[in-house]
Length: 120
Image (cartoon, rainbow, N blue to C red; front, side, top):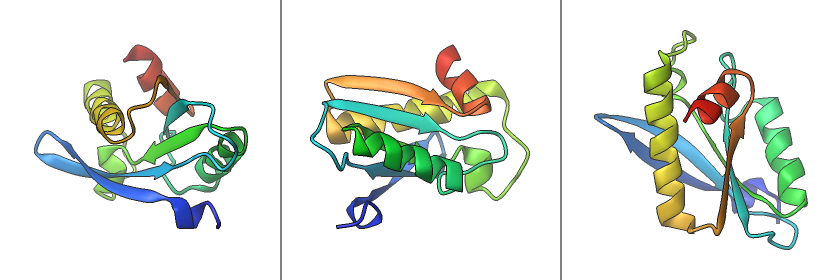
């Protein structure tokens, strides 16, 4: 089964807004950790870099959650202010905790997404 066939799509409420998240289970024996990966300012959940990271980490036993920040979900290319980015990331994290209940949760991302994760 391909990784894409194993993906689970969620709609995540962020206040009165909503975004899309994708959970991709590990393809290797599960290490027990889940990585919530935030995209960079010009990216989105399905860009080439995000998919490559998800596949590489899945192959070593990490489950991955990728998602769109609200501005990307709304079709904008202009990043939201940091408090809105953090609210979106926080909502995705809470959904992942409820759905997957990982014993270990890792946060990170590329560029702007990594900054939002480290600030949160």
